[in-house]
Length: 495
Ligand SMILES: [Zn+2]
Image (cartoon, rainbow, N blue to C red; front, side, top):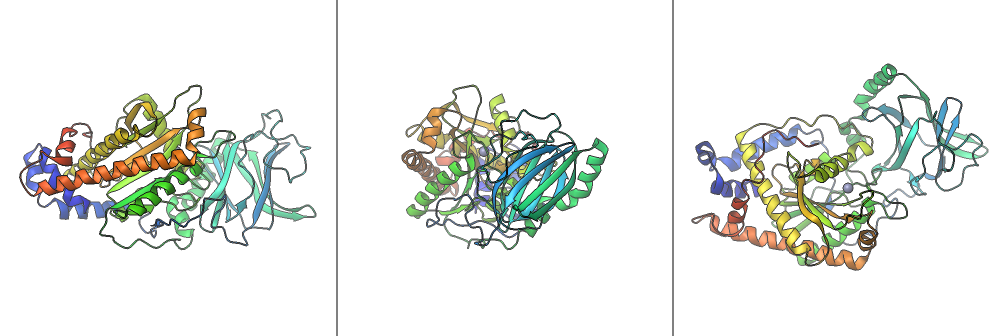
């Protein structure tokens, strides 16, 4: 649906005659080209994970959707004993474990069946001294002086996919996995991961042998049946709401505050409920629970659903400042400013935080049809970002520089207008209070819904005139005035 519209409106600011000539043929040809691109994605074979927005869904518990008989991890601690750094979890039952190493950055990944982590993620990740307290305490003993021998810089855990959980350990240096097993004795059951220092060459060899097991595609394929069926094709425009992070990737965290993944999920649900209630759009979420979804998969979901708008919801942190307010980002090959570049780099680490390799992005086809479609999409993205900023400021605070751009991976669908909304800064006392307040959430979700309606009103206006004379009215004209903004080099750079 989108592609023909894009093709038609492109005519208004196509500059070269080849582009003009190809306009009529563009919908079909672009469709083929884009289909080929979609099929080249590693995730293409995976069933669609998203579902029709479900307004009945309960708030995200720590482990919503976990099977009733899932093992429970009740505590974790780090023990340094000689050369061995041990990360140990107290478990309710023995589980099968698979562990491997990844580089850039150096990590140990421990995969296990879906496990309920019934304690908060560690705030203090320094190792405890050897005579550590017995297990059973919440979190990790954290007062100990950091041992120079410790191999563990930090770790996180959570749900990776239905039926599957993951622990990701960030290493301080190259390490070898001595063992990753569950042990049972009189004290109960523990998952223990023992690490020792190793040399760079041995580590690289271990990474190479693990690589085939750790790539996203097989991981996702092993995750079991997709929890939700593909949505039925809808006559209504499809809006994809993308709550950032999830599962093992908690996103931004400030001590004593809910994690970014939970805040943005709540916001996404509020927005979804509102849009569903209006009846104008078909609304889908990229995740309906606290589960990790790779960035490329979020893009793929939007494209597979023929989405006409993709809104990724995030919240930021910034140390040592009192920066506050919302910011709307679009994708660009060159960041609008250093701050936008920093943020895109951080948000693009999502896959890495969840223990995936973040290799080179697959080269995009350099093709005139592809370029035209992408330019058009970016123009629409800018239009929506501008609309959202102007509506948002009537309801809530904006950042000083509220509309920016950078190389966000999650915004790179070439044919789905996409924006990333940072609701505010968890590092700001003021924002953190607002972001967790239901009244603020409803008010700002209403603003986003209003801007979506305005965007589609403009598009409808543009479509009405597209068959006739010119680009002078509605969105088409508006987008044409932005024609220069999204024009970047063919190669998608990013950070
Ligand atoms: Zn984020």
